[in-house]
Length: 222
Image 1 (tube, rainbow, N blue to C red):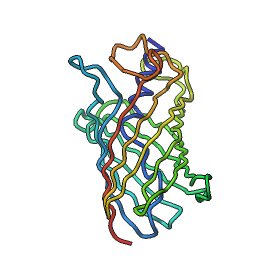
Image 2: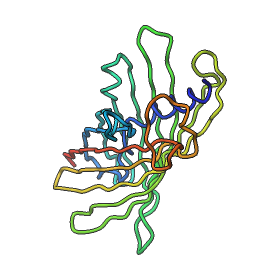
Image 3: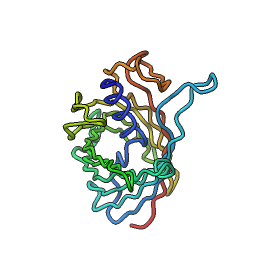
């Protein structure tokens, strides 16, 4: 039971959306995004991503800093207020083979109104990304680092895992004021998933889960 709670709650809490704003927006630029996808599961003999969705908004403070927030709409349909908020900071510029580097500290918050069930989780995304071509598209690779601050989990169970490491790779294609971001995330690849009743599928077999996401972004203003 303890292993199940650590793995299932951890995976569910932070796997509902791809990395947000890997590349910061321009100064004064706004963006809205629709995020679709989630962990791969077996359903009806097919391997499909869970049908999770969220919407998000970002604002560029300058070309190296972006603030953002997100509402997880699928969670809302099930009566859960599931939010995340954070900021992206560009630390390095691409030079030769050296990539751009960004970090995104954020907080994920989940509450069920009317029930004594409110939790939050800090996370830190770190991504290297390489722009290319006339449209300045980019590939990226990095990791979402998830932290558990609560001393106890559901049913008074002691927290066994304070940190989960989740690598990711992705690509963003730009079409004028639109962007299409796709991401493959390797969720908790060091954790055993063989005891979990949810039929997660992972490229690492009985370890972790694999997530697939599509993110459609519209930018406007400057």
